[in-house]
Image 1 (cartoon, rainbow, N blue to C red):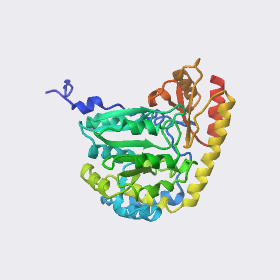
Image 2 (image 1 turned 90 degrees about the vertical axis):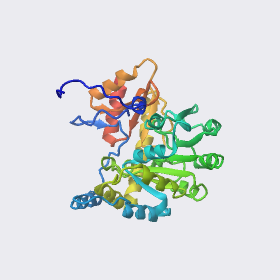
Image 3 (image 1 turned 30 degrees about the vertical axis):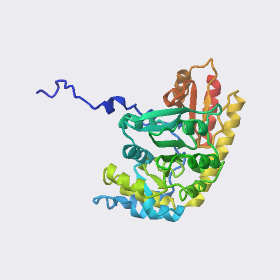
Image 4 (image 1 turned 120 degrees about the horizontal axis):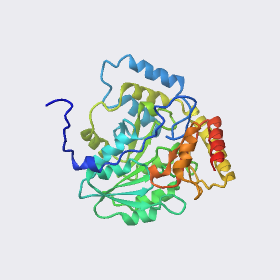
Length: 365
């Protein structure tokens, strides 16, 4: 058969169901852009972190440690969680999708809020499970009472994104603790804490204490955000038991975390003082951005993350505003791609980038 002749392949039903992840559009662009679309850190990794990754490259003729032993030991020492209750992933999405594969099938239910992280819909699409989406409350926070009511005898996985992406909001840890206490023990509760370091409602380490009381709890975290390692893709989960890590070993391909990523993440954990400085800078930017958006007559949600979320005035089309910002070198994320038409999600960048965004937005509105 000639190579240029069309072939109609028959793909699985799952492929037809999977929604396309709404990735940012600025990766191929160059020039002086304000990249405020993907919740990335505006700060480069520390030189010591870059050096650790570079040193690891000298040995890439060998496969990486399939157990991520050094990184898991460092995480165990950092959080006081046994190594066997920690799993590493090629970004937190890798762990999320693997958990879905391990727990869900067409006879099971999955509960999460919406709008929330755009990868969650892939879980029901790939597994055939029934997704029960629970609307956020009037302040765009998780409605935990409604989520509890949505749990059925078929529910196997409940996901709470805290702080929530894309709305930037968070609920206090005591409310999450109450929720978990009421969930049946055979249901896995995953708290997606990708942005927990920026949350001012409670300390990032406070949720760790829940693991000892709830073997069905998984705390999902990442090195992509506050640790500024998006490009290396390292996620991790702290689990209430060793059951989830053991199950994921059977689900995933071997060698999913590369050597440079493991080395960089391990080194990043050794610099908590720099982490604290970056969190403080982000919180300052968050406060300044909230005030400046309000001065434009906008009402941003109460952000506890490194980004903000707000509705546009009714007379302004979302697509027109996003395009107008991009034409002047400011990249943001449209709400329609994230579950809500007529909104914007904007990451906090450097002070200069944030000022540029406000000036261009002001001119458009």
